Image (tube, rainbow, N blue to C red; front, side, top):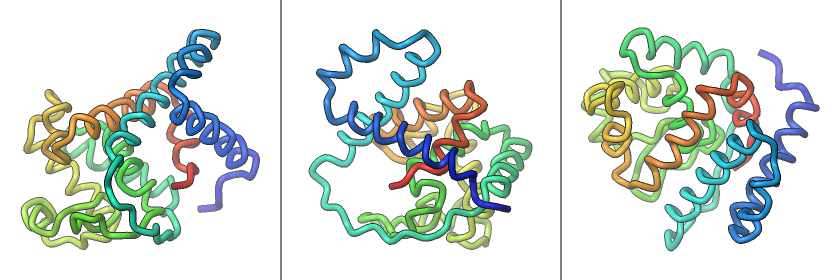
Amino acid sequence: SSAPPADVVSQAAVLQEQIDFLGDHPNLTNRVIPLLGGRVRAEVRRLYAARRALLRLSAGTKHKKLKLGQRPPLSDLSSFYGEAERRMRIGAHYLAAIHLVETKFGRVVNNSVAGAQGPMQFIPSTWEIYGRGGDIRDPHDAILAAGRLLRANGAPGRYGRALFAYNPSRLYVAAVSHYAKLIGTDPYALYFLYVWEP
C-alpha cells in the first residue's frame, strides 16, 4: 500500500500539535473548547481528554528512548481489526484504539518498562494464554490475541472491565475509550490518528 498523501500527513500533524498544546495547557483549553462548533468541539474534547489521561498515566515513569519502525499499511491493519471483530465480536474501533495507545499502530517498537512486547504490548505470560502459538511481534497475531483477551474479560458487553484487564489503570481505560468512541463515530479519525507521531 502507498504512503498516506502528504497533505493528509501535514494536516494530521497540525491537529496533533494543537491537541498536544491543549493537553499541556488545561486552563487555556477551558476557554478554547467552548468556542468550537458542535461536532468539532465534541471531537477535540475527546482528543484532549485522551491526551490528558495519557499524560497523567505516564507522569513519574522513567521514559526510554523510543525506537521507531514502519507502521504496517492501514489497509492491512483495518482487515485485521475487522477479522477480530467478526471472529470475537470485539469492536474494531476498540482494537484500533488500543493499538494507537500502545505503539502508535506499530510505529514504536520498544518493549515497555514492564517487559510488554510487540505492537499490542503483551507481557509474555499473558501472550501464552491468548497468543495461540502466534508471533507476539506480528500485528495480525497480536490484534487477534488482543481480541481474545478483551472477549475473555467481558467485552463487548463490558469494555471498561475488559480494558482494565488489559492494563489495570483507570487512566488507560479512559484514554482508550475516548479514542475508540472517536474512531467509532468519525469515519476519518482512524486516518489522521494513524499518521500521528509518537
